[in-house]
View 1 (cartoon, rainbow over the protein chains, first blue to last red):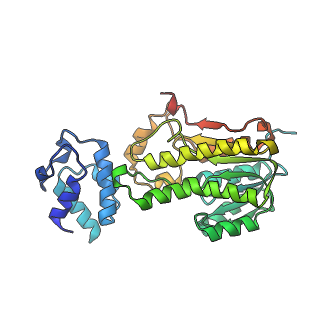
View 2: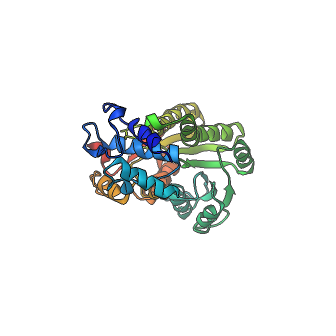
View 3: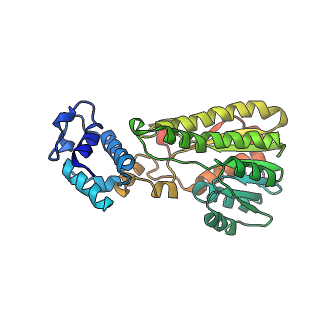
Length: 77
Length: 247
């Protein structure tokens, strides 16, 4: 799994935040537009692009893009 | 004579290998019906079969999205006094993550299968006069909507529209068609889904009666609509939602 591609896929789930603003350190829950709809869209994206089915409860403690990347990575290996 | 009895009636139940389908098959058998069970999972279908009261029941393992399976089912079934169309699918999916395959799968299982099944039983003259057709629809798409389920909502409201047309067309033969619109029901579909236990608990509390429904509570409604007690009920949607859509 490639980091930059993951960030791009992640950023694509947001409408108001510019894709260039996303990094591994982005604390996405603090974004103005963050809602449960983004959370579901991200879970769907991870399922589709990486064939990893995360449960919302696994997503809950995740704060940064990197933490999410690491979680998906751990499921892939 | 108990007006709610199903003695002497032969009822086809789809999606009978689990959840609402299994509960419906069991409840109908307890009320005296002969049940024709169909479902995709042979092991779980047999498990349902072994839970039925009475005798002369039949189990036919079939994936109704496959034309061959559907044709074979139609061939094998006797004349029916009722069908409870339960087989369905649900997955939380935001529209922008939805592709062709998702749309086709949901519409296929939730809408097209019940339509083709109904069409074929009619064309093959497998329905007795006075038969009762029941479609398990949903509050979702008919009475309310949820984030992440627009296609599901479309599939279920389409099913309701179909039911109304069927009710009108078959009324001259005394055949009735109705929907049941359940709210969230505690089934395997839910448990195996991508919803976490915390979310489920929070969601349960949104129901005025403070819980989800039980599969048998939908089954009892199906028994009611199959029975002679409801010979003047057609084209209706019976709401079973613990008060959810009151708010």
